[in-house]
Image (cartoon, rainbow, N blue to C red):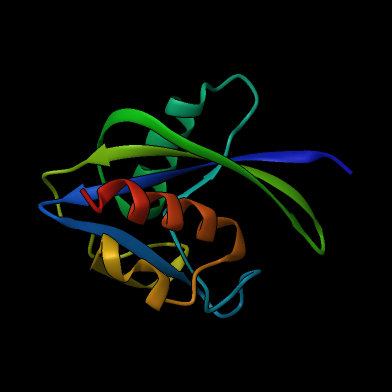
Length: 131
């Protein structure tokens, strides 16, 4: 089974990070995740992330740096999730893929029902931002 490459943005505004809850009818419905999506043929990871965030959230961000990669095996296949630290001056208020958006403290991320692939990223973020 192929490994699907997915990108996500760890989007900061002030000291909060954006997480989004997947709509109930979607795969992993009800789980929270860092927003992003699949990398399309011919796109760089960064181009894909910028496109997905505009498509899903109408949100323009500045990618600051690559953060962390993780691979997770779901029942229907494996994904490689590549995360980037981003900043925005804008407010995301609605989403085409999600039914709720929340700005949360990094230290509170594991209090949310995160998608399994997003948990290692959240743990690494908490570890890095303690200091």
